[in-house]
Length: 149
Image (cartoon, rainbow, N blue to C red):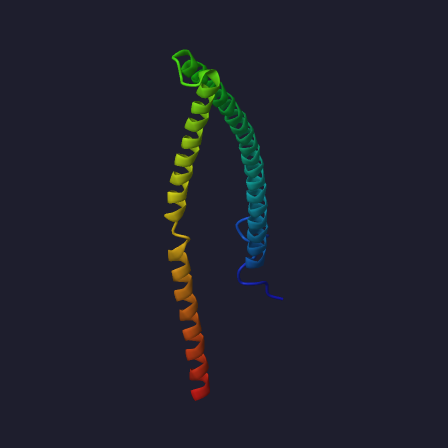
């Protein structure tokens, strides 16, 4: 019996079938996706930890700022009393309270002006409305085209 014209060399890394190559590629892609997910989990865990620490430090800073504001208000009141504010010590504290109320009103008005200038996502709502009307128009045009045919 005659042998094959071309002798086949045993399968090596350079001589694999397409099915084997696809299988190896699929396994590698699956492993890559798993590694990417693990990396994302580690990064997210680290970022959440950093965000938590930052939030705690910010809370401490805000608390300290409130204490400082209270101390400054006392210092302001006693300073007004020392320079002879009308009404004595209690009058000085009333002047400080009035200054704090004015500060609150000014901050509130600025916040109100900023809120009024919000766009309320008007561009996004407009483009979404345009997109939905376009899709409805395309769907109705496709229905009429199938009815005509």
